[in-house]
Image 1 (tube, one colour):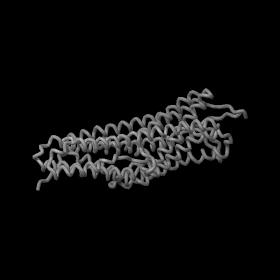
Image 2: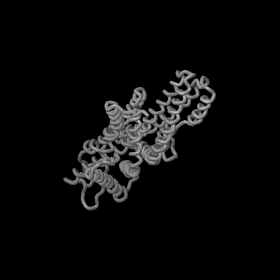
Image 3: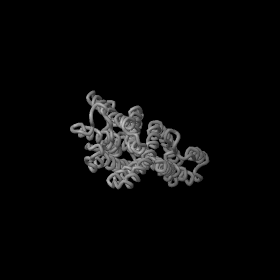
Image 4: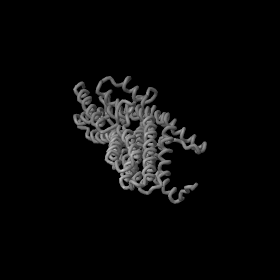
Length: 406
């Protein structure tokens, strides 16, 4: 019996590749205390993470509650209420997604452990190259999503209040604008130092909101692109079957067993990922559809009122919402396309070259690969590019209805 001892150099390289794949998403989710706590974490680390969770809940509540009070107690015009709706919906849905991520923390940790294990098991240089290529794609999506979201979100939180400055009302009182207008029952939020404190806290609340959206896009890209990498390895192994001598039946059977085992492993992992993120994706799809609609409405209102700073900011926000949704839908489409590629590669393989009993194994492989692999949001909405286009079309349609109604 031979013992397979991994080289420390290879192990270090595999750990480096895994850290490269998860680095961006881990940084974002650790910022808001959602990254799973390791089993060997110290008590201090656990207390710090739970403190982060409490702070995040308090900051989101600080944004939602005064915003709702402003809508129902201070604003009476429909247009004014619509203008205040988007920040509350954005923050409220972010809080819901935050809770879902916290609830599924163990499942997320299981999926991360599986990704790490796959990197450790990748002893073949070509397999590691394929996995690294897909990991780079997932990392790029996480980076681009974060850039769009933070630039658009923080410009909304900072530039809009600063560009408007102090406004003199018909009642001859000076008012300073907040990015998320609020109503505080026991004090005036427009005077110093209350205004500066609220302004700062709203920025922090915005960072939490945008980090949740970026983190979800990063997790989706990380897990799904990892599956795409595993499917690409299956394609490579099926392709290599054509070059195995037909007389070497043992080598063929070993390679077929590896393909079947890898396919089963992929399906189990993907099922776990979908169970973990399906309701998060559903909240993301619903949130994005509403916010795209409202962003379009705010852009038109800004153009009508010659508020070009608002138009610029909302255009960037619209792009960030659309790109976050596109990331989730694109990786789902990429997964389906890759599974179709596996099916075509198996069907086009030269299975007829092998012995009769060996050729019958390909029937099972074809049956397993015949149904394209898909992921869904809450088992309701399929994550794909047609879904992305349908959501954008629906948002534009609801925007037209809203514009005609107001």
